[in-house]
Structure formats: C-alpha cells, structure tokens
Length: 265
Image 1 (cartoon, one colour):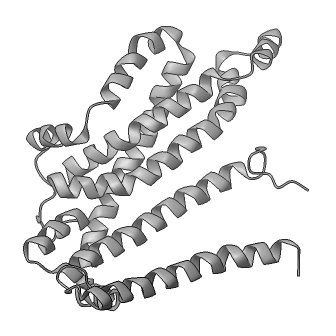
Image 2: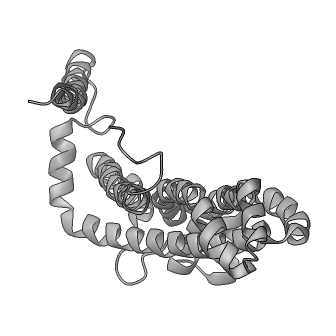
C-alpha cells in the first residue's frame, strides 16, 4: 500500500461518516421535538418522494440542465472573446472594462423581469440569467490572464520579430489559459444555480413541465414538503455532476504542462 493510500481512504471515509452522523442527528431531532413531516420530512421520506416524483423531477432536471449548459456555453464563449479584446487593446480595456464592472453589480432579481419582458418566460430568459451570472467571472479572470503575461517573454517575442498572431497563439493564450479555466470553473459552479434561479424567477411549464426552480414553487404551493426537499436533492446531484465535469476539463487541459496541476515527484 502506498503512503498516500491512508490519506485517500480518510478523504473518503471522513465525509461519509460525517454524512451518516448528520442523518442520525436529523432523525433524533425529529423524534425528540416531534417535528411533523410537513415541516421537516425524514430523509427516507424525501427519498421516497423523489422516487414517486421521479418522472417529473427527471424532466425538470433536463430543462434546468439545458438552460445551465446553454447559458454556461454562451458565457464562456462571449467572455473569452471579449477578454481577448480587452487584453490585447489597452484602449478597449479602458473604454469598456469599467462599464463591465458596473454591470456586474446589477442584481439578477432586477434583470430577470427585464429578460422576461424582452424574451418571454421560459428557456430564453433562463439562459439569459445563467449567462449574466457566469459571464463576469470569465471576463475578469481571462482578462487578468492576458495582461499578466511575463514582460520578459513579450520582449523576447518582439526580439524574434513574432507577429501579433504568433504572440497570441504561442504566448498570450497559453499564458491566460489557467486564468480562463479558473473563471470557467467559477462560471461552472454558478451555472446550475443561475439556471435554478432563472427557473424560479422566469420559468414556466410550457411543454408540460418546468425546471427545478419552477417545480420548487409548485411543490411549495401544494404543501408537498418531501417533494420540495427532493427538488433540493436533485439540484445537489445536478450541481455536483456539472461542477465535476468542469473540474475534469480543467484537469484535462492543464495536468500535462502547468505547474499547478503537474504532480511533484
């Protein structure tokens, strides 16, 4: 057994044991205080409700995932392209970056009704809300990456008569990649949250079922508390899978060459 095996085993067992302890504490809390299930359902009731509503929850999760993926993809693409413009042109950065920071401070609860007014309820508004939430971390981090390239390396490229395209391809973009992927990880963490908030503020049941946020409102209005908690369980699983995918992409692109990911011997 390698030296790292005990630490890996502990990294798995400790969270699992903590989760079991919290579940037992949950049951004890309900039993001692006699908390009714419509206020706080037991874990097995939540799992039973999730199974009973599995068809609806699955369809709702697909709606939310679609909104999260579309908004996240748009945020990453537009954010990267805008960051390139800001990083390569000091005039563009001076002109637009302060305005971007101001727009970042606009609460999404104010933007949501505007998006509904412009785009209508449903997927387009959900995508727009997810886009806004994930866009700013990508722009801010990637722009910092483009302007943080080593000055000595830039001077070396100038000495070698490299074109701007060569400088961008071989120096600036690789140098900004860790910053971009960090912004992408932040956006990936926020994307499922943004999609659920979008469901909550601008979702609809067009097509037969709404997203997770919309179903939260529906179950709350019907006082289906176990099903309401089940939407939270589905949201946690969905967010875990989404963020796990983004983290895998981050590792896949950096592990073979960047110091932050290369294993030390």
